[in-house]
Amino acid sequence: MDRTKMGSNLLLAVAAFIWGVAFVAQSVGMEYVEPFTFNGCRFLMGGAVLLPLIWAMGQKGRKGQEEGVKDQAGGRTRADQAAKGKKERQRMGLLGGILCGFVLFVASSFQQFGVARTTVGKAGFITALYIVIVPLLGIFLKKKIPWSVWISVALATAGMYLLCMTEGLKISRGDGYVFLCAICFSFHILVIDYVSPKADGVVISCAQFFTAGILSVMAAMVFETPKMSSILAAWAPIVYAGVMSCGVGYTLQVVAQKNTDPVLASLILSLESAFSLLAGWVILGQKLSPKELSGCVLVFAAIILAQIPVGKKDA
Image 1 (cartoon, helix red, strand yellow):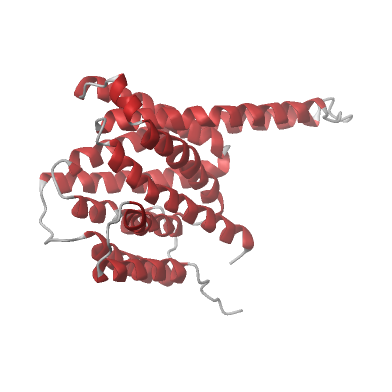
Image 2 (image 1 turned 30 degrees about the vertical axis):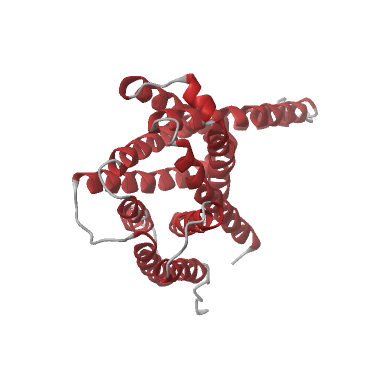
């Protein structure tokens, strides 16, 4: 595996760690505000923290244009050509980010409705099924899936079961909502896989956060009763979820997926569940059972196996 791909996979693992720890912030935040209100605040904050970075990138690009060299044959400047390409990437980033934001909002909404009607353990397992759904969708997109990845998917699925399931699997309406959430997250990964090479990752992230945030606030106004006092009381978990989980985590995902396969990305991101259990153990004092520890081992083994290159015989 080349260094670029290894670096991207490492960034995805960091994103999974950030999201895993964010479960602690979300758990504490729910003591003060309702789900749509929490999501609206954190998504809008995630978009806001990226605006200075986008401004700085624009300033750097403008400076490069001013230092452009004239193309004597065509009468146009190389800077003009670069500016045209950059404008197109920004347009794709905006459109792609809006699409990603809509999918992110729908996935989060289904998850919230589902969690209210099923257990947290079952919701965690069913949501993690995106590690299976992504390669299945890849078949329809005519993507070739190596045999090692399929074995990794099986191992990760078994690990997720051990990590999350505490009772028998019975399908309810809530389970159905969470399964729709898993499908949406699968499409989210595939959309990012398509858009990220064609646009600036920071622009995509910023656009998706503002889109998901605005939609979440609209939903909160309809289904909840947001109170500023409650939001201020939950400032710490909201800041972590907004700055780290959204601003940093999702941006790392968008940037890293430029150089790795979406199936492998979904496997690495599934480490989120393992990290969340570890964070609960360290921060909240929640102990891991032998079954949960076994699940962690299986998930980590799946990630390692998926990154082992499959050798090809020379013709």
